[in-house]
Figure (cartoon, chains in turn green, blue):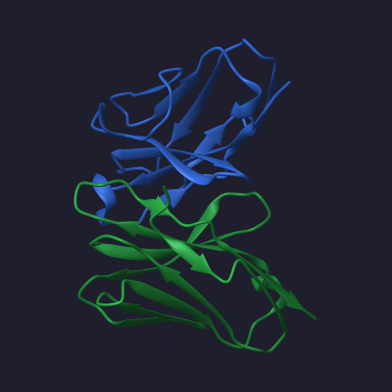
Length: 110
Length: 114
């Protein structure tokens, strides 16, 4: 069964708006990562946040992690049409394989 | 550095056949993981290899197998193909094993079973 669960499953916004996606998980983790996938291609790594970190930034991306609530959020600011993709969170633990959530499909309309 | 490469990119097979997919990791990466992605089941972990040893295995039947060579290149094999094996197969490499570091994904091999 999937550990990470993204919410919402799909999101449509206008260019320039911010997009927020959430991820919940069930067990203890070492880190949580966000990936982007364009139309059935390979996954592109966006950001890794470790369990002892609360927030991380990379360009227009902001990721938060709340281990007490077992949840994370990905914020994309000033969205562009090129951000249209599926976004996945993946949880990693010591000696364990990564577990991916079902993903959020983001559509950024021009 | 060159990224993760996977061959072939596309493959069409018929039920009952077998298939071998190949993955070359980023230079210096010794961990290779394989995933199956389908619209219904999402991204599911198949197995991970590190230093030629299988470290973790997902919940897939024995028809799915893999191996890793001394140069860290990996292959996965699916025998007696079924229609449900149609999927995008992704491999990912990492410097270290387990779920502790970033995994870098290849473009995938899209397998269609007829």
